[in-house]
Length: 157
Ligand SMILES: Cc1cc2nc3c(=O)[nH]c(=O)nc-3n(C[C@H](O)[C@H](O)[C@H](O)COP(=O)(O)O)c2cc1C
Image 1 (tube, helix red, strand yellow):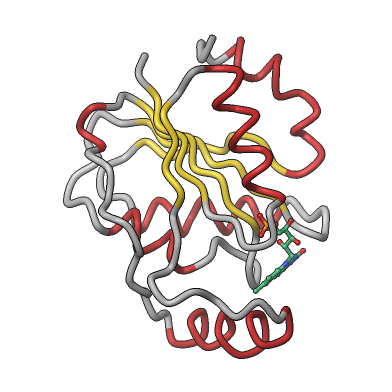
Image 2 (cartoon, protein in one colour):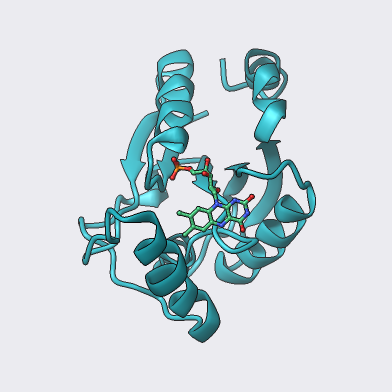
C-alpha cells in the first residue's frame, strides 16, 4: 500500500506526529502551507486570520505545487483543530482534486481540548471536501499513544 502523509501545522505539534508516522511507515510526506503565511502571533492568527477564514469559509491558496495523489492508495491527513474543525487550507487541499475515488483518507487530529466532537466535525467537513473519498477517523489527541498498534492494525507496516 502506497501512502502519503499530508499535514498542516502552525506551532509544530502536528508536524511532530506526521514525522513520526513517516519514520515508522516510510510513507511520503507533504506539508500543506498557506501561500500567505499565518501571522506568528497567536492572537492575530487565531482571532483575526483563522477566525475570518472559518466564518467566511474562505479557501486560502496553498504555497507549494500539490502532490500527484493518483500515485497513492491512502492518505493520512494530520492537522490541528482550528475553531472546532480542520484549518481551511486543509479544505482547500482536499477540494483541489476533482476525484478521490478508490482512495482512503485517515484523519489525525490534535487539539488543546480533548473533545471528540472535533473529530466528528472534521470528519463531516473532510467528507464534504474530498469528492468520492472514503474518509475515516484515524487517531485523535491522546489516542496517539496507540500509534504503533494502529499502524500495524491498518497495515501501514
Ligand atoms: C487558529 C487556532 C485555532 C484553534 N482552535 C482550537 C479549538 O477550537 N479547540 C481547541 O481545543 N484547540 C484549538 N487550537 C489549539 C490547537 O488545536 C493545538 O494547539 C494544536 O496542538 C496545534 O497544532 P500545531 O502545533 O500542529 O499547529 C487552536 C489553535 C489555533 C492557532
